[in-house]
Length: 129
Image 1 (cartoon, rainbow, N blue to C red):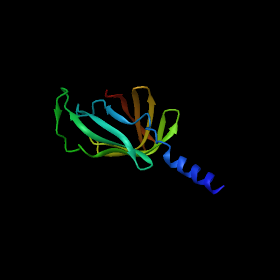
Image 2: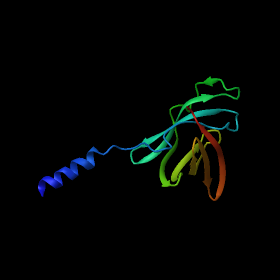
Image 3: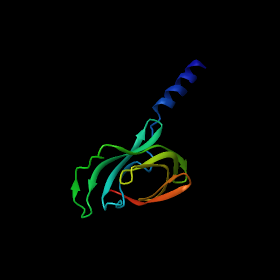
Image 4: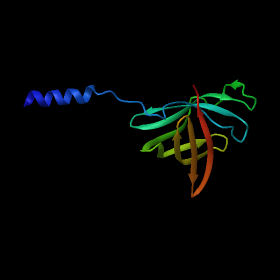
């Protein structure tokens, strides 16, 4: 019996952790200044976060933004069915933090943020291949 329990524990630890479908790099829509970026979405402990890894000006030319390397979303939780929430989204162009809601559909990510019941669309982000 002890041997069976030990095998069960070992199997539980040997089970691979699967990446969430949302993980990867996403291209944002243009902000109020015409800039866009690539956001790397990954696991941050038991939650999901997104970090700005590249910035682009209104002409699509890459540039070094003061926000590169900063988390633009954090504490997101997979709610199932392509829905994510319970986290925060920071909009650098407005310097506002919103309660974030994300909806994943294939290679498209619909981003929305709300503060005091007022919601703002972050647009549909596209997965970077």
